[in-house]
Image (cartoon, rainbow, N blue to C red; front, side, top):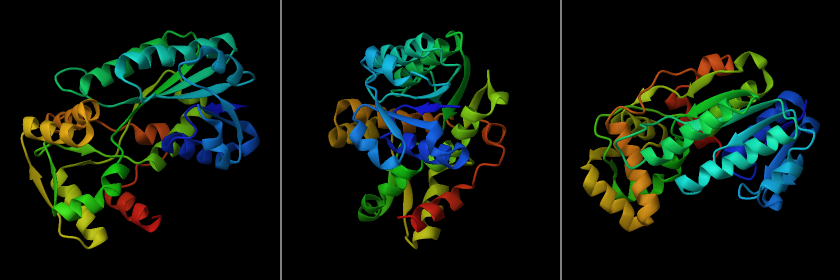
Length: 283
């Protein structure tokens, strides 16, 4: 069985490739990357695949049984076409199964919703492809919060607009473990899984970080408007709006969803505190 992973040079793609190597051996894993050199350290065959280029994927998916389509990072409207390039090339090449990394989130009512809507459209495209399919809806990765720790420490606080909303954080390592099983095992075909961990508030997140890093962070909630203005000033309009929308979604409960992680992976999701400890250990 040959399994291909798109966006193999990205952090999630690389994590999935490494997990698949452990499960089925490197000779059965193909990485696809827009810039193949960036994925060369993974130790598997790397093929070129730019989401904007259907011809790339007609070549990249030759001889592939199953493909993991990792959601693109482009602006919302471009993503739908980009993902269709992969789906159409998969059909053209006789790929048997497609697994798609979608996201948890509110489909309406916040600034992140346009991205959720494009993910839902690709979900429909995958379901209508005629191939076997599995869809994972990823929770929010905890790694960016931990990578941002120096800034939190400088500010002495975690500040956003999530209020007391709960977020079911996950990690790239946990997702990689689940996606490897979803790619390999046929029993998941036709399923949509929420790939998320335990629901925690931002105050709990601050407490966990304090426990592991021996810090004294506090959480301060600000209004959605104030946070959006702050993020746009720091990151530019597009990214600032998206980040503010994510925390607005947490505030409104869009990220406090039932977890299907154990169904998808065969084991419980690791607790948030354990994930933070592992992150620190591996830094």
